[in-house]
Length: 174
Image 1 (tube, one colour):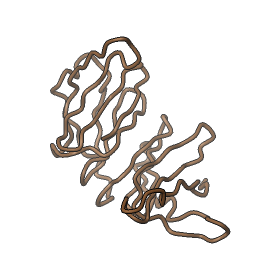
Image 2: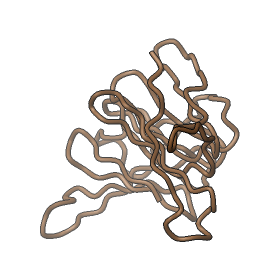
Image 3: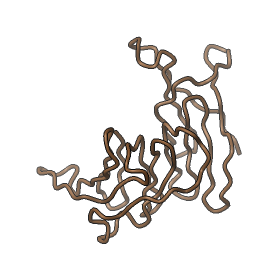
Image 4: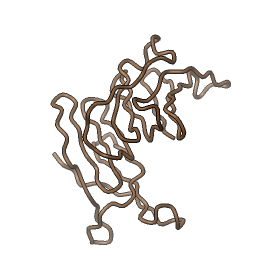
């Protein structure tokens, strides 16, 4: 369901039907070595993953959580995520700036959470398309480029029509 590449070059993977987190130790190698890491806070699916340093952040069914030191040798299956207490009812997507900010989304809005202050704010609720401002609908992915621009993937048809999704550049909020 979700993937995140850690600073150590290992690829972390989450699943749709359970809260397991695994890592591929050689994602670009000729063979794939798989190691268990741990599990989500609630034991259910994890929509998206992202890293800040060695800490792995998870967009779970009903919470944003974190596995501290997920890249350490101590995480060999028993590391359980802890909820961060971020109040977004159904997180659908997650990414980070790699330093201090998490960007997350529910189905219609994006949010910015600053770890150092614990401050959560609405970041954007829509984008511009052909000169009109339209609201996001059924957000499923977020991406952040090196310049700090946030990109939002949504699909107003919820997947019922092929080719109807959008990728928006969210307005930059200082």
